[in-house]
Image (cartoon, rainbow, N blue to C red; front, side, top):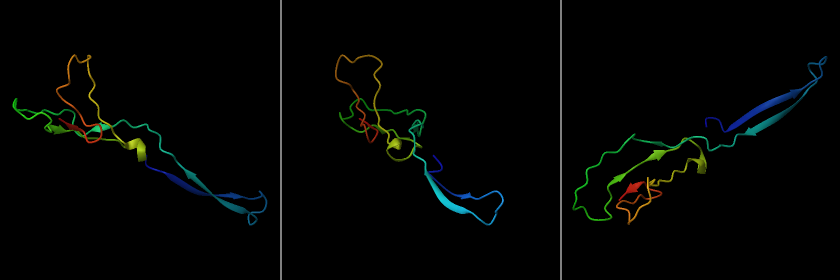
Length: 101
């Protein structure tokens, strides 16, 4: 995650002639691997909601960040159901923004 490019000079020379050599530059591009788990900004969120709050109102925005680079750092939010729902869910979570409504 910390180094994306390494540039070095490589020299080739005969063992007995120190002034006779050739150099070339080697550039190594390090590609990011999706190896970092997203981290929430809070371990837990405790929210009080009024029972007469309008349906579809924003309740809380959860946020997580990922230390990977580029698209490997994109975070998506989903609610994990512990058991299949028998009716429409009471809450929804926006996949991209993290808003719980």
